[in-house]
Length: 391
Image (cartoon, rainbow, N blue to C red; front, side, top):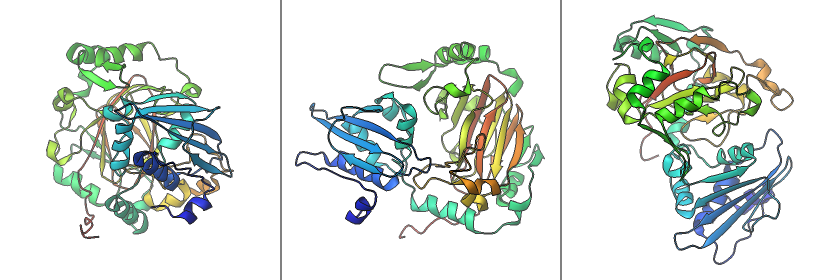
């Protein structure tokens, strides 16, 4: 809970009224606790919430490089506008440690307009890490390991499950060549995806916008000239952004390591992304991750966990921790310590799997279009003792 001193320190005015929804108040408090502005941005955003009985609530956020303020009145002038049912706000607040904005039950019921960069900025403040996630990332960051000085990617050709686990235990990223799969990677094409999965629902973007695999593939074909300057993460890229892999596709695209019960729900990364814009911006995951490349090549830039100070990770995160710095266009005025960071670069080819142990930072860039990958995580980090439930 934020104290009165915390709110005053952030120059925040919370103008509460007797009829103010407790859900909106809780969401406002999470914004206060998670907000950062190292890029010194400015903006005004209005949230509209509508209850099932038709009652309407407002939450307005205004900030600049020096100030941050919240109140419960609508804005006359605004840069961005977010509308959602009150029950969606309740779902966000009640699951702040695990909420995923790609969830159709969330993104499918939100309307966003105006400056979408501003929308992203505020959405990234509305998350919070669990104690288990904090423990895992702190362990990766603070415990010295010889693997962090390796400076290059390890390659394993057709490794066994035991060899994969042993490599993860060493806390080094590696690439698997010739993994066991049901269908070879070179058997797939966009046309093959349409032929086999054309009517499968791929993702839900709003209450009115749903896309099948066939519809999304057609969108890829018509957007290959998109420029990096036109890309807004999560909104304008013709890219699935890691939404859930449809259940109908799991058997064909989950390599035969371990069992499906050992992994989190797989995610699909399909689309067309300009080579000078990140397909996935710099971040780190609290679980050991697998990225299986099926079409096109990807460039991955990795940083060892002990370099966290140089990468400016966000204080608000849950399922993964994003960073403020952008490796492809770093602003050294805002992020001067990034000049000390030492990356490892790898090219991931079709038919290969990149494995990055929990806590390793990575940014992903597409070298070819179209691109198609599937990612998934081992449910529990290897070599990390879970937190005592009583903590």
